[in-house]
Length: 151
Image 1 (spheres, helix red, strand yellow):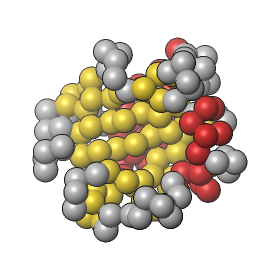
Image 2 (cartoon, rainbow, N blue to C red; image 1 turned 120 degrees about the vertical axis):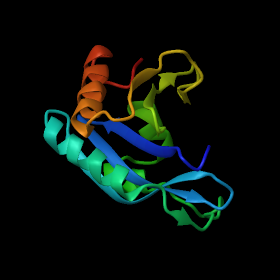
Image 3 (cartoon, rainbow, N blue to C red; image 1 turned 45 degrees about the horizontal axis):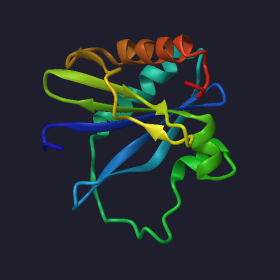
Image 4 (tube, one colour; image 1 turned 90 degrees about the vertical axis):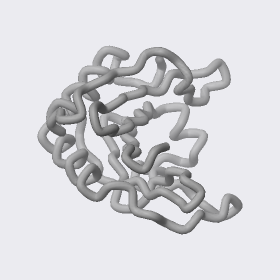
């Protein structure tokens, strides 16, 4: 990912959006970091505020976590049993903020129940789009798939 691109992760689980800040390791790997902002699906203004906060923070440099001991912070924040439970029931959105646009890639479901982001169902908004516009896109996408992870 280029230095001018920002990674943003948004999760939808049990009628809530979760917006963690995202750090970038020295190996250029994106990792969810605190804080994780939780917002009810109906609270578009709250979701816009959460997105604004993570956009303003950017992707701070962080040490590379140990793969053997790292526990995704989203599990604790969401109250999911474990990663498998979370991935099975959640939607994930990978958002890249480039200078001229936001690319929004929603997760799809593989036959094995894992997330897949390798598809052409990609949303795009101008790079100057307001956080409220991003929030509305996310809410509308969740509504379009029935508000669940079973896509």
